[in-house]
Length: 336
Image (cartoon, rainbow, N blue to C red; front, side, top):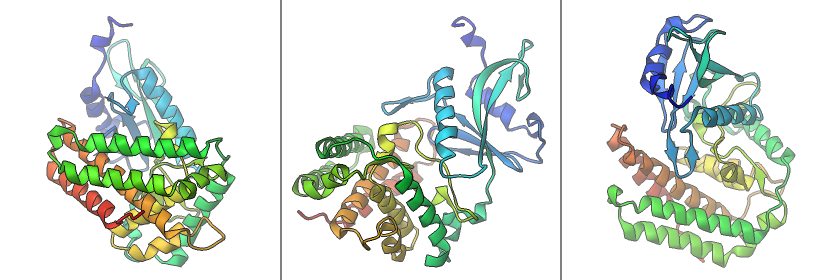
């Protein structure tokens, strides 16, 4: 097994194969490649095939085929919770005895692909953001509400939940303080300190979410580009590689969605989104500011992480995104 690894196709060889329209058994007129930090997506006429990169970071490990199989299986299972007939199958990319790649039934699996039905880009919330209304957003928010309410509460104490939040803030701070990023250390330390101070000063308010059974296994990456205003709404691409990061307060991820809509030019949607989970109207405004500051801080670190990837060429884009999120965190002006 180990001696044969050197002869197995690498990421670029697999990519070249999957970029050919002739590679797909159902046929397609074209293939478009989209790339993320952790995956390559191949968009055919009707489907999307998602291939994980063999990467390893401190928060995930896709370095082996077995590990990629496991995370692809989880992606399929988890994303079926908020979609209907979108996440179709786990498809093996095979290598024949003669050294040919195929998506057919014969040969040894050398990669695993998540196969999805391709949704219309014009139905994505990012495409609809300029004209979305309370009425058109209501079915999506109702689906999220039903999902969060039907999810089992996790046995997490206030102490455990608060400790997790503090640890995540510190992890983000350290990530943003990487010397290679050359960011303003004082600004980053100040934002982290404001978040930690707020957690301490409002421990009863924040920790009460755990004590009252409000921590569930959610979506984990609830952004507008993952929301499709179809009938019924489809919510794709949950955070599949780390369960701890999916275990959260539903208000946390609704604040995240509201933040992203604000950054797309629709701050007026915030109240509608964050109050959609509760029957009691608008949640505590300080808690909303905290979660949005926390999410903006986290997103700044994720954007900055692209700048540490030697393969990334769009450095100006990720520098700009890092700045946008740091500014968004600063605008929350947390006060104890």
